[in-house]
Image (cartoon, rainbow, N blue to C red; front, side, top):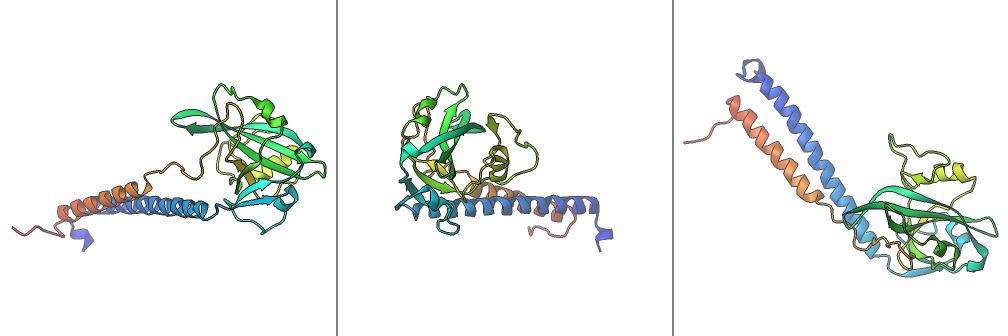
Length: 230
């Protein structure tokens, strides 16, 4: 039957593109659902848990986005190293996230995303050495992607990758890292996890689905598989 179609090449190529559009629509829909689940999870974890650094190493004790406040004696905490997380945008302006690694006298370590700094990196890093207020939320580490591999001995990171930072520093990190939500430092903008960027994933999902529907109608019409009644 397909061999008798007047525009069979259009039929084959057209429906390949239709399936691509449907795939893009599904991908955007799943992104929208993931973002909604994240926001709901953040909203449901508004109680502040006072914990020690040792508690961070207790597997399965906490969930992602749990709000915490470290109760550790700050005099026993030392700054080990800092990095700048590349390509971060805040209010439409490019910059970095300032990432810091801290250690205790018991050789327990934890990683902190302090927040956003501009490209000129004019943040006052002295606050990292002075009694910072470790109040934030726990986040999972980033997953290593394809390309843009982090470079050893660099002050810059493409992602907060647990395995890379452990191999780079020779320390054992806990299951989560901390994103500060308060007292992030001079020149550092705290990351607002409670009101994240609302990407138009749902709009894009409808857009790609509409394109798929329109192209399907065009292909079927050109091959006389559907007709309009006069």
